[in-house]
Image (cartoon, rainbow, N blue to C red; front, side, top):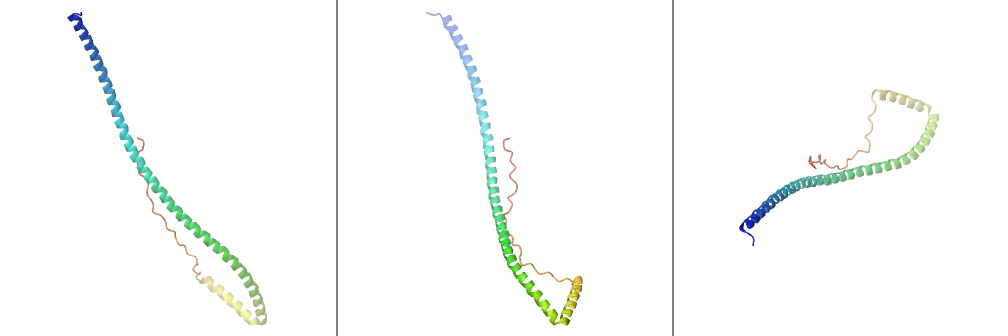
Length: 168
């Protein structure tokens, strides 16, 4: 049977081991507390950055919608240009044919009239020269163009993106 001194020495050794274990547990607890603090810091950063990303995503969606509205305006303008161009080409084709016929007929009539009425042809030439002199001083007012621009609907600007410091 062990003596009281042996038991006491074993208790002292066990107490030393318990002190070592307590010291190691304190170190583990300190490490765990540091990991928990780091985890809370990361969670806070992630929450802030996710909030900023959501704000930027909302702005991006708004910018895309605005761009879509601008595209509608551009398409409207291009459709008007295409319609007007087509109308002009059609009118030009008709007018060219009519002007050719008018020129032929007018030249023939002027020649016949001048040979039959020489005094009237001379008066007409004098009137033309007088009209040119008057128009040098006071030119006639040009006619109002038939085509007037009709603006397409435009979208209002959305403004600059939010100023966020992402990934700080």
